[in-house]
Every structure is written in C-alpha cells, then in structure tokens.
Amino acid sequence: AAIQHPAVREACVYAVPRERLGEEVGATVFHDQSVDEETLRRFLKERLAKFKIPMYFQLTDKSLPRTGSGKIYKLAIQDKAVKLFSHV
Image (cartoon, rainbow, N blue to C red):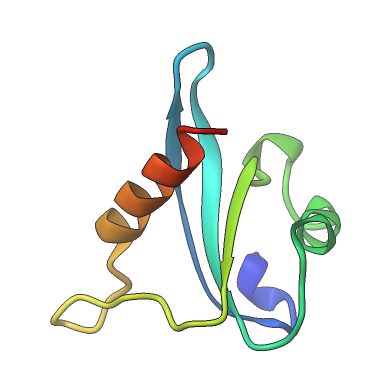
C-alpha cells in the first residue's frame, strides 16, 4: 500500500520485536519527493486496517539494498531498523 503513494519508490515492511506487545509493524521507505511519517500514516489509513499501519518508519532518499538476485534485502533492512528502533 505504501508504494501507491506518489513520493514512494520502494518499501519494505517487517516486524519490530517489542517486549510488551510481541511485535509491531515497521517500514523502511525509499522516497524521491519530500514525504514525512504523518503524511504516510494518513495515506495508509485510507487503505489499510489500523493494526497494519507501521508504528515505526525509517525514511530514506537512497534505494533499498538488494540481494544478489535483485530482491529487496529484507533481513538486512529489518536488522538495521530493529537496532535503530530498539532505542525508541
């Protein structure tokens, strides 16, 4: 749903472990136009159930990393994001 936004070029959604709730949704988003978390949340609110909207966003103006076969390298993105969001 995030890649339907005009500013978003790529998106990777993953689980972020949380002690109290088990897991929450996180997303890393590559954009080529100015966009912020609140804008994306409002956009996604019209397209997804509330529990599917990411709690955590990592926005980047760089293309997402890829595996040797050209797929988005979700595990690397998730590992980096979990370290970042563990301080939140």
